Length: 476
Image 1 (cartoon, rainbow, N blue to C red):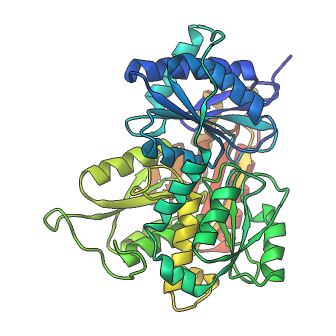
Image 2 (image 1 turned 30 degrees about the vertical axis):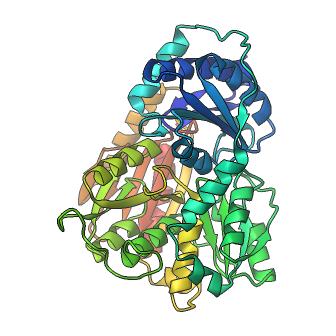
Image 3 (image 1 turned 180 degrees about the vertical axis):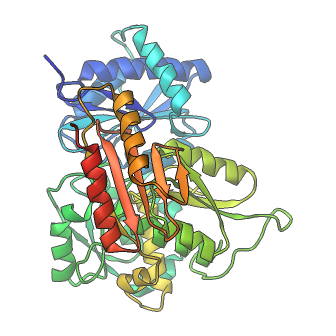
């Protein structure tokens, strides 16, 4: 029988369709290989476990436990947001973590995200190749007599919220008495988000939506209606493992997840080091500290504009959380003030940890509103650089291998969009023009598709560009 979609193994984790390319036996094999990687690096390691709310999670987690049990002490965080689990790596001085989640993928998918010390970030390309090699050796996990994992769920959630709040002007946010509608999509972000809103003195309105995981504007109808009906100041939406954040304004409009990062970066650059103070940061390390914003090549150009306005240095990476994490870690190690993320609503704030964190993002947005003189979210967004952006997915030509199909597509796109001011092949292809318009084409790390982006100050240009990209990408 042909699989509906092959197992995808990349630095974004392992993803597959449950019961097809992904089973509890598959998770056991990959977890066992991961356990061998951990054991080769750390003596008597502590390994954290977690999962999102997908129905397939418990069975897949049981397979992972079987694979990992011979290699260390297992600590179970239960149903937990991925950023809470990643933050807990430092809290519990753990050497590795495994989360059963497919993040933003549709409901029939599930998978695993793997984190490894000392960086406590997801695996990079070399580590993924190592993992694949160990799986290919076909060493099967055996039954283990190890006891049940230790439960540290409450501690992980509590400390995550406490440390997010330690970086915020909590009293100022409380004084604003915000009414916030939150839509975790039925996912793992519910508990930690509710706790955060409670601590920040917000009146929380839970929207129990039944949408698909990815918090795109077209999926947020229930949240948008709730924001208006409940007269909320703000709506927030997450994917199933809560590393992505999208916003909804008081009028029910959904500006798109790209603007989450734009607003967070502008706020952090404006406020400086002290929570709630919109002032320039104090230079450290003998006055040589730089402010650095890190983003990937597929993220809106508005982030570039914001960094330039504040005199910050911009660093671009290939798509993939680990690329951002490693670049941020390098800048922090040099003594610079660095933060950033991805245009999918993924905010990364290194003082907490080096992964995307919607909980931190919510706190920063609320702080921005609280210190902004009572102006609503739309007023803040209107002041941001704005581009019209279109994002699409396209299937690759089934008559060719994946690599050949991608290579042919990139050649055709570059020929179609000749005369560019800048061409980057850091990740797929990005073609930029002098007026700020750009297009991007790259193979997905999480789905068997190619991703197409067109962004421009001109709606007409963006409309035309995405139509041309879709035409070129259509298999002949």
